[in-house]
Amino acid sequence: MTDLLDLLSFQSTFTWWLIGITLVAIIGMPRLFGLNYLNGLLSAQITLFFNAATIIAGLDSRAVTAGRGLNFYIIEFSFFALTLAAYRFMLRHRELVLTFLKRVCAGNRATYITVLAAGIAVFNFLVAPTDGTSRIAYMTQAWFSLIKPLIQLITPLSYLTVCIMLVEKSRRYLGYTLLGVLVLANIATGSKASFALSLFAAFLALRDLSGYRGLRIRLRDVVSLSLFIGAAVVFALTRLEVSGADLANRFFLYGEATILTYFSDTPTAACSNVSTFASMHRGWARLLGDRSAQDIDTLFGYALNIEHVGVNTFTGPNARLSAYFLCNFPGEKMVFGLFMLLVYLLLLMLLFRRLLIRPAYLALVYPFLVVSLSGAAQDFNLIMQDVTMFVLLLLLTTCVRIQPMRHQFG
Image (tube, rainbow, N blue to C red; front, side):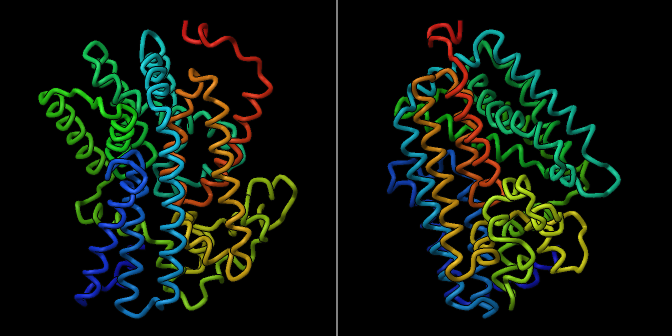
């Protein structure tokens, strides 16, 4: 799909000014909400910038109209502001969350997390194909939905646990062990060293939790960690035969879905065979027997790829929020997409507030909530999945009898 990059044009002076203004806005907006310029939502900032860059390139080449460009900026920056507001609310309780996260990393609990992360690594090695076929096709299978909730919780918790243990002198050995496990688990899925970005985002999330007290990190620890991550990145890229240019292209292809919709003469074509209900929540629609939700070819990324190359190769871009809206919710249908975004944010905030009285459990779920906020705009399908996850967690915290807080961590 790298041929899509040939559509990008950055030639006029206005284009470079707009890119600069957009970058400043993305980095500066968190300060309006009392957050650090770079924070735990780093992934959201990076993917928003590269998606905006594709739109700016389209405006430069006139492949994207001014109206569509405005549509992109309104949807993306409005939702970015909402995620920043939600993140700022959660950080009001930073001391409570950080206290119990540190307890998670104490004693045998961090070992249990390491074992679970190792299990995920082994699982990835066993199920991810190595014959050149799609490495994500199995994720669309029904059986994977039974395992995914555990992966959703353990993976972000593991990255934040690594950061906490690397700061604590007595836990560094286990911290590096867990980091090695996470690197292997990441490589097994065919990811191009995204673990480095995940670890940096986790570090920023930990810095956000630390507040004005800051983090005390020795220079030699920074050097050691940098060397470790550098070696892991080289190993990952070599194993996958990925060059530096390929890696750079990958960042611009964060905007793959944006290009395939906003540059298209018929941006709704790929979504014409899916019902509005399935567009709002594919899993619930499939459960209720919606045929369009049961047809794998209507999955957004696959559908875009079919529209582009004419066949389902079981690969395709993530369902970027603005691209998903343009394809699935044109015109007055936008209200259905906005409704799902409202449901997502309300459930996230409700779950967080519910867990405030159970901080031991909040500490386990908090990293997942941050990753969810950070990745929501990058993939509307994740919003659907996380809505289901929020509902399940709310039901568990409501129906399951919880022991008194003082006994939760011994």
